[in-house]
Length: 105
Image 1 (cartoon, rainbow, N blue to C red):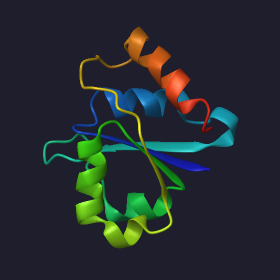
Image 2: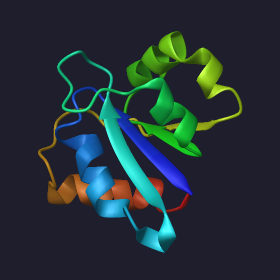
Image 3: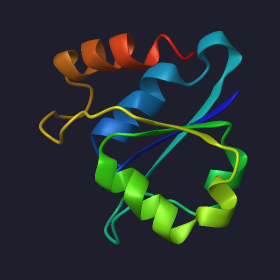
């Protein structure tokens, strides 16, 4: 399965998730951000590639729906509702991700 994690800047939350879950159960994982200053900015190609898309906040899902509505058709999207208050690889963030994402992968 191809999994895409999306947050704002792709520097902490989604990058942590990518590092945690890439290769787990044979899954391929990528991460991206929705803002212009994102480390890696989400593209239509990434949306097409993904089987399942995890957005960290409702605003991320709204932004990709506005920009990539055609590519999102038939895609599973899940909003995690994890605020931008954690550092990269923060222990608490990892615990939350394990509990939120684990059931899907």
